[in-house]
Image 1: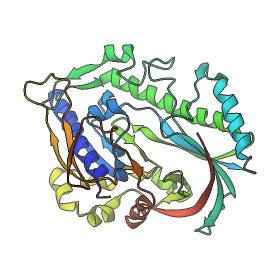
Image 2: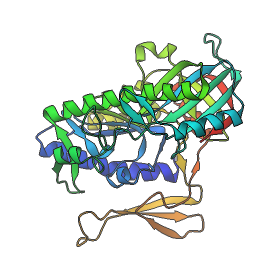
Image 3: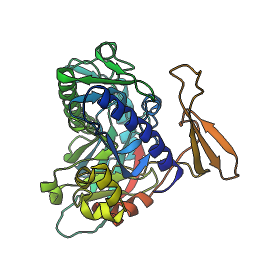
Image 4: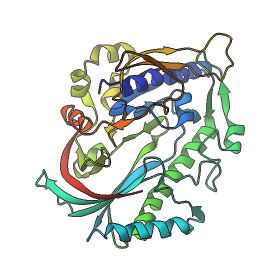
Length: 384
């Protein structure tokens, strides 16, 4: 998008990718780490993930022989379900309040209510426009965005997802020193077990979203239940971007939500970035030089939202490294210039106020040939 939020993401991800590549070399593995930003590439609101060198909105690749724990996978995603009718908003809010007070259980795990946290939500939507003739879409849908905290600290399925919360995972982790700071990872059989655990959590979260839909709406028909923050395969981590089966792309629908006052779109992917996308972006020469052209061409980087933006900031000036004598855990500071030409320094990027980019992300996605619009929905209400 060429804005400050994307510049911050790129600068921080360069730091994270450099750490992973340094760790791969230390472990005797060919350095292969790569970040491919989606059109909504931006900052992450997760302070720990940001501190480790990760932004949000794209595909992160590294050697399948390791599992990088600092990326903090959580299986977040969105469910789109067909409804016969939209219940009145006051009815749905009453159901949500009741649901928040009750304890549900799924696969023997108590579920906590998280639809009022962070950027999670429940949308009630009505069809405004169909843009293709070969897909029959419903008049009413709900979109539920959630991930859940049930498996971050401890889990019956594995060691826990978040290294800063799970004592078991922290105890198992290898910590590799790099010139840009320590990187926590697993390798060998431990990495395989962690990937299997993450896949199990992603399936659980799919079922969890459908359980919430049943409790809130009763009868519903799931159209798509898509993870946008998880592993498609070992070493292929989608950090805020969808993936899909290229052979079934023509029958796949994915939701794009751009903000509480923006329409919801159902998109049909047109395939991975491909040779056309690499050439259109002017990446061919550099990708060939770095030996990543094939990886880029097969990258699937469909956005799931508009991404955070900072309209009050003009540009990123520099990443200011910590002083040489600073403690090891000291984070670099991002120096930005505001619209008045004044410089601000941020270690915690959550500090400045943010907005959403809106339909510029959709326009960019279409222009790159990544997807086409199947239908546009008006949001009749949002429940948080």
